[in-house]
Length: 357
Image (tube, rainbow, N blue to C red; front, side, top):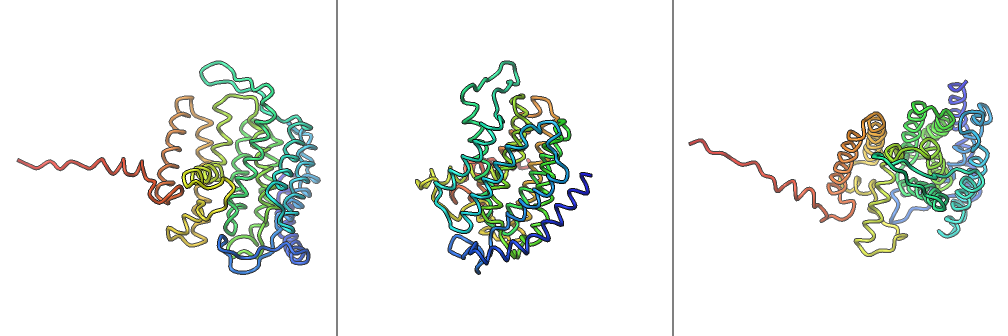
């Protein structure tokens, strides 16, 4: 039944996207080119509505709420409607950042306060426990809002956010099957199938953008599902969703660092995100998107290796990931062109020539 449902979601997205495209033009949900954007013509957005409608079809068919963790299902769906409405308003009216944030807070509040989803404590790897107490609600909401915006920030090239989200969702589904949380796996696969169908129209050259309707929904659902499978467990296991979402989290983190270094407001838009830097490095539009897909897949693989390793093995994986991320950041100038401390350090080690006597 799951495979049939996934196929229905995939084809429903394919059929619904052209209809949503017509609706976008009719209601004025279009994206005009400017100096920060890579497209050169007016494009319809709102494509995320097709993803969401396909997702609704999927959960109506298979009804995953009877599975483990299904008690959160109603709040997740209600919050999904809130986030979709927020995204649609922004795609049509371009609402202010404060109003957009208010919609995200409302959606997170439904899941955390009404639904009861929150990280209350974590077990430390070498013994002991951290009990978040009253901080469990704000910390969980910060995670949901943070990941929601991280996906939104990488939505800068045709097919980028949709592809990276699909890879993350498949990774979450795989890990959830391993950890015995079928509800998370089913929900993740339904969203992934719906998003993949939309990508047929969204991959370069795109015929429609997902807009904030899609980016906010994907960020929201990924943040919630990644949290569902790993709440109230060990510190090491809590790192898994962070690794899976390594691409959007890293891009967001270094965007914050870049703006602090350049003394710019944190909300100031720029053209120095990961995809922008790769384009400047000489990669084509498609090559850049595929390269970031590859990075996202590597993070997913690293998360699997991390989950199966010992504590010390997990630490080694984390160190290797951090070094790799830093090398990529310095190589493409993600923070600043002259920021290359590790590369300069490595260049300092020159081979010693030993002359034969």
